[in-house]
Length: 370
Image 1: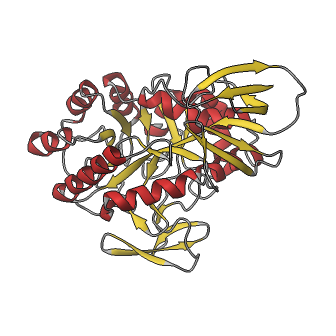
Image 2 (image 1 turned 180 degrees about the vertical axis):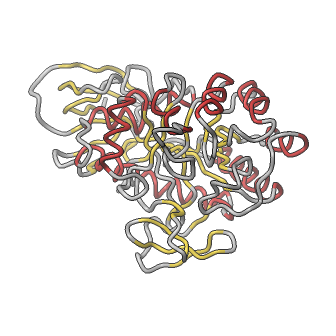
């Protein structure tokens, strides 16, 4: 039976020296030995991936989604959620079909697992579009019915101030879909009502939402003070300054945060590459993907890059970074089979050296070739 020894991340964010024995699932964990050595962390789980290595989720075939899975696995991300952006409903339905086909063909022992689709729009505020097109819809009527019918849907981002939003949140929750508040101009009370209705996450906090003000606390203050919903952040140092990430960490703690990349097809490509996002061009500039006018469109980091930034620039212990990048995403989706190193769970694990360099990735106990 294979074993790994080192500093093992516990589900509470602590690190304990010991040994893990595993096959496809973790068979046993023994805590003993010296405090040094490699870090053994649960495989990372990314809840927001728009593309990678030149492949855009909105246009990808099932085979191309599998290629993204292969690339993500080699980065230490052992599960992910393909993300569709605001588009005509027919285009979103095509993405749903491709994601479903990719899931059906998915061999979760060979690469990063596809967990379903994250729909980031069209139920968003026209005042907080970010890089999204002006194709926004209200979450009610035929539009809502068609979105709820999407077979692979696992997460939906919604602006809670839109007409019909609270009723839509309740319907999504009944269907088992995680509702995330984002791309929103909501005030504090609207955001809190959305959490009470069942919203369980905030999409890329501070980005594409009403800003925090001492006289208008808005959606940001609701996120920073919520006990009901996780705060998702893009930890690339561009979308949110590291010192603001530190503020979020001090307000919510590791238990309340989720790391996501929101990466685009430019991720993993030559820094001079140019791609299209719908009808507009995007390029890498200043460490992130941007439109021609400088508007942020997404990131180009890996989940491991984000976890490293949280450790090195925000001061988060490595075990707590794993909590944000794996355990909490699994909790948000209600997954009990992965996201933590515990007996009986899938042996999805990464091994990092003392400088947080990636040494090994295991998916259901099988070591990937990096």
